[in-house]
Length: 432
Ligand code: UDX
Image 1 (cartoon, rainbow, N blue to C red):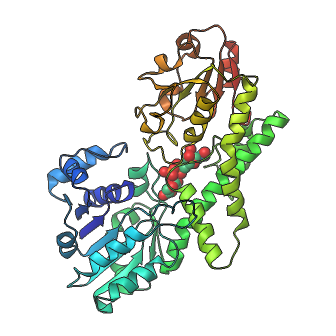
Image 2 (image 1 turned 90 degrees about the vertical axis):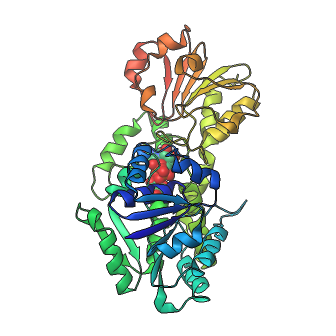
Image 3 (image 1 turned 135 degrees about the horizontal axis):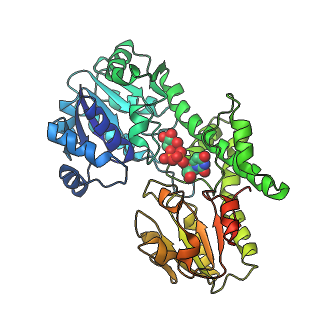
């Protein structure tokens, strides 16, 4: 089929490349010429393992193209995916949908034959209704159909999550569109993905509810980790003990720092905003947001206690600063709260991240990026494991810190407390 992805961020680029890899002809459109020119040379603007090979392979085959011309690209395609950003409005909970509506208007000027317009961006419930209204101002109803097809891609695992999804959710009441999309996704369905056709609004809410539930699960185990620390219980035993109940499931029960990223924080807020507008209170999600917002301060208090309230001039190392491993994304990463706070308290901070220096810390005096683990850790008083990159898991801290006494605060529980304590290193984990 001929597809057009409008927006080449995490969602549009990954989905577009993977659709091309399934044999479709795909045009990825972006208004950023610089980005498009890089993509035409297979230079990838995001860190996503395995994406560059797929871009090269499918560009070479001629199936995957990049363009800044939305009009031409829409005219050439049968199915148009809206994959633009829907960030939270400043100091609000509401999602900013201006890019979605702008693209919908542009699409409506280029429909001369039947086309399916798909909201793949995470959009609040009833956005599909509004997109339909915008397009119907210019186009007869029988020439288009607006469908919700949310993505469930995790950064760092996006290709795998596309190729092996648990489910494909198609929100449409149009039999014709449903048939076409079931055919588009048939290679994944034949590999075991569940195909769910539901109403457009239900599909929109499924996306938010999924992310909100995952955020709830993480917050649940994070709060129980706080209790485990007081009761000298290992939270990992708890995760296994409850997670082996198939009704609960063991995934997303790893205690850690506050959750971050471009989705959970944004989507939980947008869901609460949707509920508020429908005069409904989602008290559980509100408390999840509140609990997660407080988590970084809670961990910073722990750091103060660990350092006996003497932070000034202490040498602190952060290993990893992105919101999780296998991504370069800093959006709502807990390091964005923790490092400035410690810096303000007079700590001398070094950090290393496999994805490189972060501009977010450029303005902070006494916060230095180091290009390898050894330089970052040498002679530090406190080593904080902020993200669970594999390359941190087997380092010989004793040797690289090269200091008689130092402390490790393992926010991701990647080390074995027994082993590390045997090396006479003072160790603190999360929930254990
Ligand atoms: C999430 C959803 O998983 C994905 O389905 C959706 O499409 C987009 O949002 P992503 O934000 O990329 O994906 O990352 P994810 O792996 O879900 O992690 C989100 C946050 O939760 C990270 O800060 C991560 O460190 C944290 N997390 C995750 C935990 O603290 N514990 C866990 O067990 C899992």
